[in-house]
Image (cartoon, rainbow, N blue to C red; front, side, top):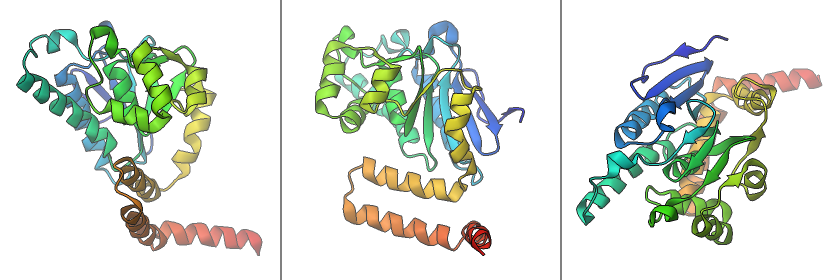
Length: 264
């Protein structure tokens, strides 16, 4: 199916619906290594919120333009005037809120690492629910090279995802983790050897394309509760709420009838 340009495309962000319910959001600054200036993050968050609000959307894919960088971190020119505590706190809140739009998006958000995700770009990748990493791409928390630590919620995301030992190793040594190592550590969910239109990506997305949007929303709701550490009781309540919604939906009864008819 031909991709369709959607609302939300702008100077720095392109939004395409590649297949029904599959919305791809691209940071379109290849000439600047897809650096994440604050206006870029604001556009990205707006595109995520707009697409996530559509009931027919199954999932979002965030990627970068070109094949060298997914995102090369914060834009140093944009951040050059952040020089006192109040400015640092404001920057963290503003950029962190943009990534929170991804963390709290009601549908799954998948990072497609077309190239290296470094610094703030790695934090963007970790804000997503899953990561597909092309064979040549690397992911690295290299903030220590600038004599700083993580800034936008990416530290908690990394420690929660791969554990304190691997997270500390990555951050303190500024490691750029290749695709196979990322897969082994749980940083990546699949290695893509043939690009976004190839068989590897199609194989990964096929089950998601077949999943009902309301089911994916129910799964993402549980992921949000788990990520926020709200505890078993809150997680169980969310599970029950979405089970009621999906159980009573026509899609559930159609799927049940289909299975029953096969067994008769």
